[in-house]
Length: 331
Image (cartoon, rainbow, N blue to C red; front, side, top):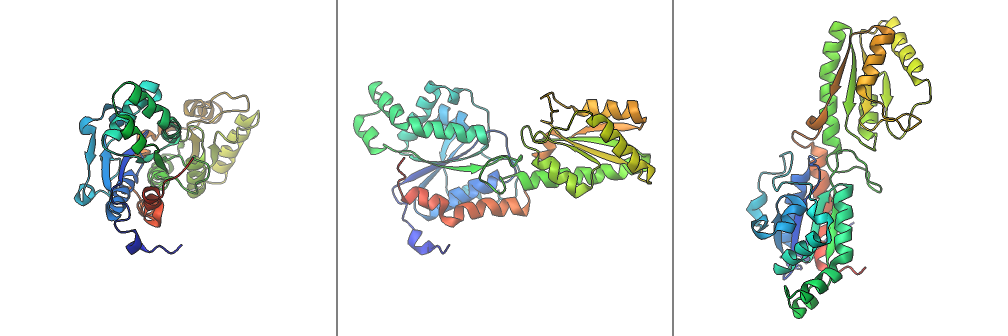
């Protein structure tokens, strides 16, 4: 798609947009904040950074700050999110969303960019659908005038899927998934050397509560012996098959075994398959020296990959935010 950026310049004058990051952090969120801020400024809009996710939107005050071009300098390479993220129970309530609406209207913000996962974007959609009712209630309470409510009758929202699990329908790759996969591969490569030295079996638990993407791709890339993911529960009797596979690998000269398990792995009956259960099984049946490594939040940490840095920049520089500002979207 051809974009004439000169035609976009100052086309958002008089508009205001805010950006927040919500839920679990994902590498690349800072790149998203940077892209939203700079594209917004490029088209002449006021851009606000909302700190601490939806909690900052509910609390208002200094949690919502006007940004300039330099506010997002030298952050594209940073992991995490410089504007913070938080799980916000208050926003799940009507009163919390009412407070959030008030703080946006106060500043003339009717364009919101949310970078987060399923829960964050679901909350954003509820907020959008309630917007008119929330403004009406604020008028009844005397917190805003009717003329102000009429001026800001519609809330535009753009969602950027920030989730290391790559678990959102309709996306080829979510923000942070590629970086998390790099972290996992670094750990597996490091563990493989020590496992080979001591002829050990390692059971590695990776993130992915309902999605096995990280487990599947890391298993393929590392040549793992066995894999557990929530989307494909193993058949009854899997214990026998797995142990036979591990034993066969050793009998052919391998000095190690790698088993990768997604944290949401279940069996055919919906019962969780834990990494410790798999470890104990290998020890009891095969007698192998077996260790468990739970990667945990190391998968969220570190700098974003080049792919994640470019991904969010492309999302926004290809007119996503410019369209949001310039064109009023009707439900």
